[in-house]
Length: 154
DNA sequence: CGCCTTTGACCGGCGC
DNA sequence: GCGCCGGTCAAAGGCG
Image (cartoon, rainbow, N blue to C red; front, side, top):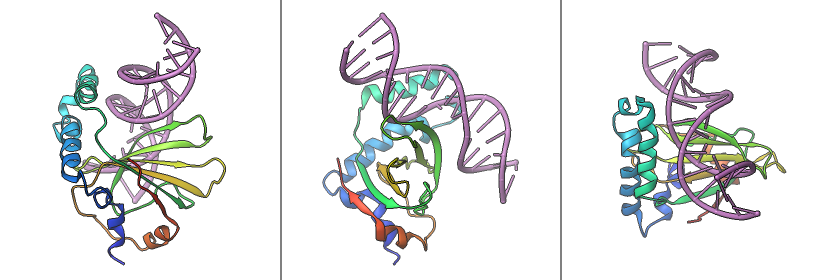
């Protein structure tokens, strides 16, 4: 089914504050990703950009999490993700990976974490919403969706 | 060659 | 104030 990838668009789950959240998220990250990357080259200014983001606007983007049973962490959902961090959390012995959608103006973040108990279970958390169409379609995607359980939190 | 992953350091929040 | 904890940055290297 071609509609499957739409399930990953958090917009569908957040009819109430869709446009507001989208614009705020976009605005928040405009300085970082949307703007010139050259400004980030300035070492000390990098912190300022982040500080400004957190200072003015706190958390405004919605989060959506779901579980899947998969062997691999990176579930290819049709979007392009750039990994920007990996950290170990206390409760889980497996590290948590941080990804970001590589598209100007579309700053959707995603965390992938697998449970220490069940290696086969992978928790994926989306943060924000995509402002662009999906780049490619997936075949194995329906397989994932079959096992998927959605937690619409926040 | 361009994009992405890796990886240690850093930062801010929070609890003690 | 200090240290833990979770999230992010950014330089350097890898891989197609």
